[in-house]
Length: 352
Image 1: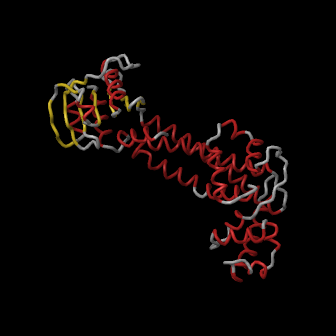
Image 2: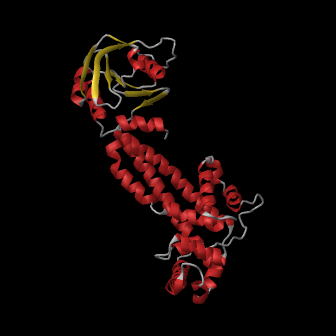
């Protein structure tokens, strides 16, 4: 969602005082034209009406909308500056609207860059104009239904991602990882993330009505970005955190067809244009070590740098691990025991 749309929803989403006023006007079927911002550019095209400079309340806006003219609010929507005003935008500015109220709103917004809201008396529709952006506000029930549907899709992708991660961990311990196993993890995460963006858009539009959806969405994505970042760090040829984050950002900008193509993902992850889905891969051990409690990322980095691969870390003795900076005997034993427990757990759950 663009910053422009987020600003619109911050002003007119459920839970805001302005939304309450718009709902009152909509139910009363009086129609209305509301301008947000009494800037000098705006006031140059305002004629007539009367100055109020009164505190903004939903009830006051509702009553003033019974008059034909526009209501002009302050920039931060805390004052009603003018009522029953006439707006005279440049008639040469193109407008797609046919009704006088809506065409005026569109031209004024394009001319001044201000937020203009037109409430249709006949159709009971609220249309928001912000510069060259036009948005028709949807019924909250419709938006909520779409949000819940997207949330379910997001949860399904998470389930698929968890399954792919479990498979990957098990394959790492039996040393049978191929590039397609890694690519499948990144693909599932990216699909989940994209649906999550869609859910975030619905949450912004729902305003105060989207609190429960946000809680559920946060629970679905919890911990997944860190997990997949470690996967990327494990398998990139130069798998430092900045490089892994850069690759994830790059994939986020891909077209959906590229994300769905596992071969394209394999080539990106291996940074090898000739890589195939069956290419063998070996993890460094970032993700496996991250599952051992109270092991800081800096220490994990030292262990990976010292041994180079998960296999070497697993085969290392307590004494060899103890030589790594930041480990010590207690952590060395914790690493060996933790990796052994992790292996026993995931191999039992292996899904081929």
